[in-house]
Length: 324
Image 1 (cartoon, rainbow, N blue to C red):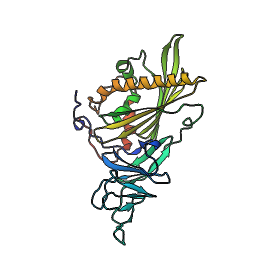
Image 2 (cartoon, rainbow, N blue to C red):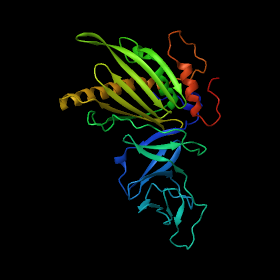
Image 3 (cartoon, rainbow, N blue to C red):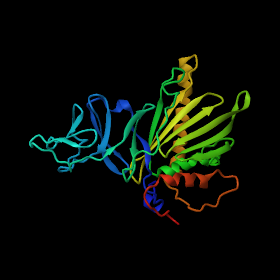
């Protein structure tokens, strides 16, 4: 079944914030790759010292795509068409057949950091500098925790729609078949951050036990989801708009290690299997639903309107909500 056109369901602009664009091992020092995020053609390259640089892909000289045939020369990116070179700030540093450079030849450059095992880049449609930082997650890389178990999905919807699921506990019973609905204890926001604390009952061979699902969002593109109770596991969920029709979601699980390495792997595999199942259950909802600006909510629904107010701060461009 083909999803309805997104512009008939939503009219949100692309949100701004920190977004995952790669894993460090995706690009070796001296390598170049082409990417598409934020409805832009991009080039991600790594200088020979190992630093990452994300820039608009098209050479301002005559339009060659720097991610297709471009090469790294030391700390500079060379265009495959005429050999012009650009540094990590986007400035033209050399025109090989001229004694002068062209100051107008500048690549739009996106602030980029490597943190928590991800290559993160800051996007803002008006080139405003980063308004917050992504914190270091101490469990990542800790010997007591496993390495990442990663899944990636491309979904035909906008990021806000997927994020809203986090404050909609009722859907888990009807979409995912859980026996009970998580009990939300609190939902608080502070600038670009939000925290949702909840507890969930689980049926085990020894009876019903309680666990926790606590979600810490840092802007629209980075969330730490902590599962505790039966086992301790963390999902670092990153959400990156590809364009106005598609979003890439990556789920990166780590679990607290057991004494038995095989048991650790089995538990991690079970989490990944369950999240794959849930994404496939959510996908037809996400890809066919529309945004209802004034929903007829039940008195026991989650803090959906509070979430929407918080999320709206990440839109720098004016918009009209579809259907309003």
